[in-house]
Every structure is written in structure tokens, then in C-alpha cells.
Length: 59
Image 1: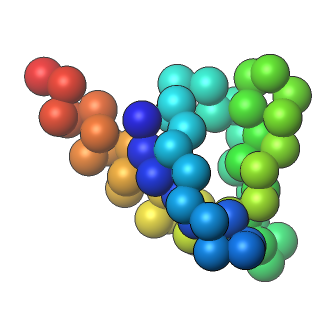
Image 2 (image 1 turned 45 degrees about the horizontal axis):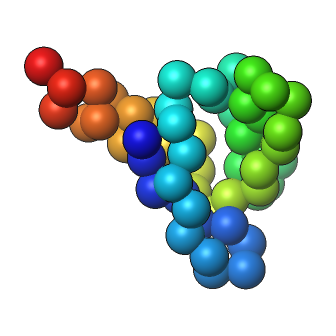
């Protein structure tokens, strides 16, 4: 699970295992495997870093 910030400054927690696609144009859009799209403030590289950190913490 990672924390991301929506455009209205609301922090939400998403399950990174459900991320299918991320696109930065210039806001970052996260598309989940459920089809839901979430627009967040974080850059794609920052989200990838959060995912890596989360996955490492599971070991």
C-alpha cells in the first residue's frame, strides 16, 4: 500500500498491486486494473520509488 496525494490535497492509500498503467501528462494519472483512474500530484518516478520501498518492506 502506498500513499498518494490527489489534486485537491487529499491523501489516499492505494494498493500498488492493482496499478496497471501510470501516465504523466503533466499530472500523473494512475489506472488501476479495475479500470478506475486516479489523478495525483506525485511524479511517476516518485510513485515508483514508493512502490519499491513498500515492496522491500515486505521482505
